[in-house]
Image (cartoon, rainbow, N blue to C red; front, side, top):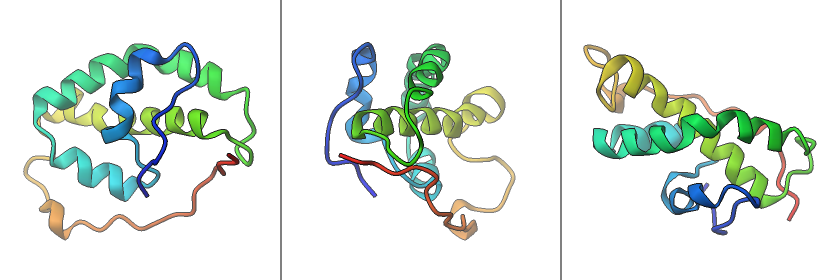
Length: 119
């Protein structure tokens, strides 16, 4: 599901340019997006988000998972995308896993969201 609001909590304005394209609520969407991106875009996203993950985690600890404001959920989803992108940068040097099953044949099973957006 695509995000309709382009917002992040105060203090994370540097990550705001990523929200319209990089925020997804499901692993399936994040994976599909990742494999379609050029390495330079994955690297730029990784370089911007990786140093912020501790700050993101600290900020998200303020909210219960069943009552998360949209701006905080966007931040959570950016962090999840950062974790989706990390292996492509750190291990594979490729948007997709090399020498493996083709992306189109790989099915990610949907799991219910573990958080709820309240606004």
